[in-house]
Image: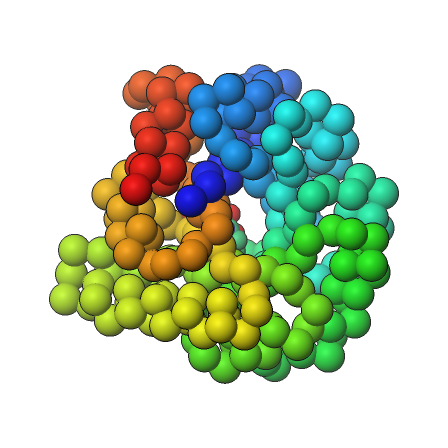
Length: 238
Ligand code: PXP
């Protein structure tokens, strides 16, 4: 499996003081040097962490590739069409949320998503839909034109080590199998850490895991390079 490192939290820390440190673009370079296969950054409508200039700089300096997270928002789509990241992950966005909470409602917003995705796919950008591991959502995602889904691992991560873990894990496994059988490539992410990530190897064919919070948290103690190296070892290993 590949490891995508989400660097939003580095930008959150920078913005807390309003200056330029720590620089998320420099952090991305450290992540790449230590085993990240791609870098994820979420350009939110309210620009609370990553800013437009970060996206531009990342697109010019990354040696791997940029995965741009964004909501269904035409202004952000214009930026994406200019910057042309390798991939985009569409997520729901609510102003009050602390982080992305639920998955995208691909079934309920099928027409809107299909329309939104078309120019991105036509430009050659790979599009992924961040959805809950729910059969209805997987089936809907197939026909939107998106080539990937990213399964929301938040419920599994919260249930890890409790009586609910197996149930949440099986939902992920079933959704991944269904997506793959319908021709989608399947990624996963949200809430994954150095313990719960290991079970992702029990799901056949996952392409990439996108992980942010646990890596940046560990970096406070071990340094970013070591934190990425440790996670890359767990994700890339068999
Ligand atoms: N994938 C998606 C679509 C996300 O929105 C996020 C959080 O920004 C992540 C992965 C990473 O989640 P975490 O920071 O909990 O590792």
